[in-house]
Length: 592
Ligand code: ATP
Ligand code: MG
Ligand code: MG
Image 1: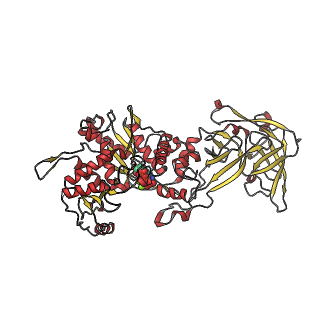
Image 2 (image 1 turned 180 degrees about the horizontal axis):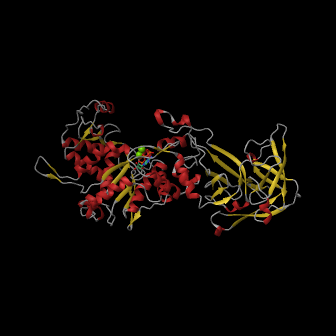
Image 3 (image 1 turned 90 degrees about the horizontal axis):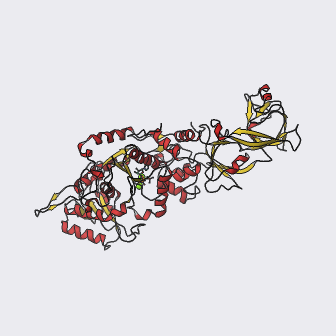
């Protein structure tokens, strides 16, 4: 259960490690040509992977899968996994997002330090090399500056069934291209006036190979490089170069990049090869073999959840949720605040494994993994979430007795919780029925039940308000029936109720959650996901808890008996005004 089930990726790694070019670990050596591999680390890693988010939002449960795959495999193979920010899109990125991403990866239990290196990298650190790569392609006759209008460019790209049309700028001279690219780079042209394109094949059946754009003009401030650049590389151009510079062995990405793989290989192949020039000189390769290889795996799609940073951001910006860390959000910060543990999320990722084709994972799989992680860890406590007064009529007002219960049923060594019982208690409203339905074994007039860890009682009746609503239940207590005493066994009852002593109860705010969306595939079929938001995804109740929860601090997790797992809210919980979030119920109540 705990080993990553990423077998198809492991097979690829295992096969590669047998190949001669992998035997001497060329990616693990200090590189010779400084300009070629500046910054490439020297370490004995068997494989070198990376997790490359763009710092344009908070990470979500889908990213957790990519994190577990990459950091998990690196760990398993005594390799390295780089933490790399793919920060090539300045307008959408920020330091806040970057920091939140580092926090999320650390919290999930992974570490980008290996073999004494801090493997934290930024695509923006390679902008000089990327420009050099672009100029290399121009000199090799493999790139040109296109000044068609955006509309012409789109039209001339063609369609799936129709070949594209060559740009009138496609056959510019190398000198002209270098000059126009310099003009782009030096800020002489406004945004959108020109793009640098790779010169491949406008008739390729793969539209990604129809002279893809590799550099665009964007007069934008970058959170790390400031105003130094007014051109920025396209993701598809930048990413392979980042991988090659960092000497990545396997560039694992999600399936939507499959059609980009030919360009990935085209680009790196050309940068790693010498190009003879018309004048007899040779343009020398600027990258070295072996080159990284891109391998795609299925992204995580989770039922009733959207995993798109853009859509999650929309929920935040439109105040549909309280923030990125709203406990209903599938972000790592949201899951954390909801009470998810790193171990629970890792267990989930290992269980779902990695495959080559897209599918949906049922949300219950995530919850099941969490329950399995929490059950052996969580301290037990009692909470009454829908309180109804229960009055024991045959004892005096000041009657009081001490009760104990185990902190955890399977950890005797964790000791006992102490609490008291008295004349006035809180029970769950649903545990009383004046006229019991079939198979109802809890409280109804004339029936006996056990108050868990306490006494057997017999219900005598109830009080109602003028609308007929039950407002209190009455019972008599059998004082010789206390749990743990010899008398207890003489009482045979079917109901066993949880309760809290009203005199010592802790009043708390408890948040109960339902799915954020009412549809299994919220953003399927062109539907607007906002139209299927669940209006009842959050219910807040005032609950009564046993006094032992007074010691809780933000992040403390309990199993409230019968109700599920709860966490003291990371933001709002105070010792004198506790706030708990329900993490997950004890049993799956959501499955169809
Ligand atoms: P989004 O589409 O939500 O904006 P993204 O793919 O643009 O996410 P990046 O920051 O580029 O996010 O992603 C970093 C890494 O996480 C990428 O390698 C990407 O493939 C992976 N990733 C993103 N979403 C998922 C997912 N749902 N399942 C698995 N991996 C994912
Ligand atoms: Mg992205
Ligand atoms: Mg994406």
